[in-house]
Each structure stands twice: as structure tokens, then as C-alpha cells.
Amino acid sequence: MSSTAWRVPLIGALFLFALSAVVLMVMRPLMAIDETRYVTVAWEMWQGGSKLVPHLNGAIYSDKPPLLFWLINIVWSVTGPSEWAARLVAPAFGLLSVGLVAMLARRLWPEEPERAGLAALILGTSGVFLLFGSTTMFDTMLTAATLLGMLAVWAMRDTDRFAPVIGLGIALAFGVFAKGPVILVHVLPTALLMPLWATGAERPALKQWYARIGIGFLIGFGIVLLWLGPAIIFGGAEYREQILWKQSAGRMVESFAHGRPVWFFVALLPFFLWPWGWSRAGLATFKPSRLWEDAGTRMVAVWFATAFVAFSLISGKQAHYLVPELPALALILSGLLPTAERRMRWLRLLWLLPGVATAIAAASVHFGAFPELPEGTGSWLFVIAGVALLVGGALIVLKARQGWFAEAFVAPLVLIAIQIMVWPILWKVYDPAPIASLIAAHSENGVATTDRGYAGQFSFVARLEKPVTVLGNSADLGRWMADHPGGLVLAAKPVEGVDGLSQIAERHFRQDDWRLYQVAETIAPPAEAAPEAAPEAAPTPAPDSAN
Image (cartoon, rainbow, N blue to C red):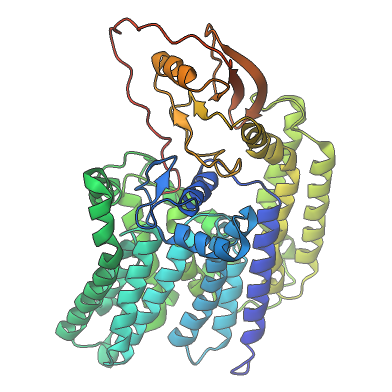
């Protein structure tokens, strides 16, 4: 391959990722609780809330740093508060990551330019990266920050110039602004273990190396302080405790959400490798002799292994925690350089297994396999359409002369087929818009909810200009009703035996049948409630499932 031919698969990777991510995004609603939560935080900032300290439903939101919310507000300054404009921000960083992984491959293996284009193609068409890369979450930003950090670390090995040290600091600061101190787990172990992957004459002097790493860390810390310093001052004592302890060290030492067994990521490894690692050529790239054959491959192997072990040992685990390590897998797999294999080509059909499993599940809805789903969420038409797309994908993978051409289309086609098959479920069960439209039409006298875990899932979609009042108990409800005649009360569970409250609508959303109640225009003030034997706990928001 010529020195410039690698750009063709890179362009193809960028196009496929951008097209697939947009199609996947358009095919599903804004998903609760995570996507609706983050866009609501950005909406409250847009409405005039603090630019330093994010807020959710009127309360300080310390679970995430502000970069995503800042960027959404910047986009909105051009487009207005558009849902679709906001949802394009995170995928844009996925697109950036596809370009950065090609750049890193060029640095690692300058004598093998073809690996740059193939690494980009692998990352841009990997199933897990496409799935999370099309959502409004923080992981694509963290992935881009991690790649920038690895580019800086590799450059520091090759030169004594100070620019890569500054680049490392900027990458670390970018990662903190994107998702918090977790960027250190993704980048610093690889930098600190330099003697393991850089050997012989290519190894820098240890004292100088670690001094430069320390300076890079301090540069990053200094950049973060430009925001964190004012934020912890204006955010108050509660925000300081949350942002400095609970949302960083607290998650690592003893998770307060998402506790998983130590083998959780081992079980998910086949999904991280789908589809590119599901072949003999792909699996061969993970032989120990291949992983240790040159400095570039060793660095990438150390990068993936250290993050994999670290997150396996941390008590709280989510599948997307390792999204920033998917570029490492793509770089390793870029050494496969697959050739035509006519023998046992039918094994490529294994790449379609996730779609086949979904087809079976979607068809079983019609036979009562999922009684928790409301009526009307199953549709043979959508199942047949999804299966037809899978059949088309099967023909592509069977007839393709080169394995890499077939694999590039597997995840986009399968994920689109899956979303076609579950289309009625996504739009009838997970779409917040039907409830939000009712809220918007009845919100002029105030909105409250008895759902003590309310996480803003309707606030942006309804374009509410004031927070939803979260009611802690029946006494709170009575007082709120007296203060808000004609107000609206949302309830995930029935509210019974309350005078002056009439149900005006009921809609299914996620696991609950939400009821909307209207407060009477004239209502007597509540009587003094007798002391309760055991006061109810204060309302607590739903856990941030995307941390």
C-alpha cells in the first residue's frame, strides 16, 4: 500500500461512523434516564443557570463536570435549544476519535501506513463504539482525551521537546472536564510503565521521564483549577464534598452504584471485540508474541491491560467505562491485514449473532415472553423488516472477497436491524415526548412529582422553565396543592384518597404507568398534620447510571 493509500479507508471509516451514528440516533428517542438527564442539565444552564456549577431540576448537579453542557450551550447559541443539535455533540467526538486513532497508528508504525486506515475503520465500525458513540454521554469525549494523551506520551518518548509535555497536560485537563479524574486511570498507568514497553536505545532516561510526566500532570491540574477553583467556592460545601470526594475517589474505593463482580468486563470482552475480533485473523493478533513484538504494540497492550485490570478491581462497573480502551483494541487488530479466505467463509455468519438473538426476542414478544411490556409494543412488520436487513447483511459477508470489507458493514447493519425490530418498544415505552407534551400543556400553574427519584426526564422535552417540585410525603403534597391551584402533579404510582386532585391522563413510560393529576382551582388549605412516628427520608435523585 502506498504512503497515502491509508487515507481511503480512513475516509470510509469517518463516513460510515458519521452516517451510522446519525441513523441510530434518529431511530430512537432521547433515552431516559441518562440522555434526558444530561440534556436537561444543559437546558437549565441555557435558561440562565450557573455556567460554573451545573444544576439538575434546580439542585446542584455534581455527578459530572461541565464540558458537555458547555458545548451543548455553545451549539444552541447558533441553533437554538434543539434536541437534535444537542444530540450531535457527543457523536462529534466519536468522529474525532476515529481520526485520532489513525493519527496514533501512523505515529506507532510509520513503516506500516496501512494500519492507520484499518485502525480507523475498525474503531468506527465496532459495535460497542457505534452504540455508545451515537448517544449523548461522556465516553466519546473521554476517548478523544485518552487518544490525545497517548499521542503525547508516545511523542515524549521520541523527543526532548517540551511541546508533548504541554500536550499531555492539555489531554489530562480535557479528560477531567469531560468526565472527571477517571482520565488518570486511562492514561497515566501507560505513561508510568514506560520501562515496560520502551526498551533499549529507545527508552528515555527514567529520572527525566518521570519529571516530565509530573510536569504534564501539574499543567493539567493548573488548567482544571481555572474552573474548579471558582466552582468549589460558588458551589458551596456540599458541592466541594461531592466533586472532590464522592464522585471520584468514592466511586473507586466503594461504589455507591453499579456494583459488579470482578469478572464483569471479562464477560463483556466478546462484545468489545465484535465483530472484528470474531475471526481467526483477529484472534491471532492477540497472541503474546504478537503483542510484544515492537514498542508500539507493547504500549497499546499495556494501555488496554492496565485499564482493564483497574476497572475490573473498581467496585462500580458499567459497560461503557472501557469505551476509551476500544481504540487500543482497534490498534491491536489493525495488525491482522486480512486476506481472502474462501475456506469456511460461512463462519462469518457468526458476526450476525447479536441481530439473530434480537430477532428471536422481538418475535417472542408476540407469544407473551415479556408480560411487563404494554400491549401494542410488538409488531411483526418491524421484525420482518429487521430480519430482511440481516439477510442482506448475510449476503454481503458471505460474498465479500476481503474479510475487512465484510466486517466494516456488519455492526452498522446489525445495529440498525436491531433498532428496526425494537422500534415499537423504543417509541412506545421509552419516548418521553407523549408525557412531556401533556406536561407542557398544563404547566402554567406549576409542576410537581411524587417520584422521589425524578431526574429531569421530562423537563427539557417539555421545555419547562422552572424546576419540577419533588414531594417527599403526603404533607408536602397537601401544602403544594394549596399553594398551586390548577397545578400539575406527576406520579409513577397512583395517588389515592386526596381531595382536590383529579387524574387527567395516564401514559406508560419505561417500567411505570405515569399518571397526571390536575389540582382543583379552589382548594382548602391543608390541616395541620399529626406528628409522624417515623418521618420519611428526604427525596433522593435517581442514580447516575452513566458514571
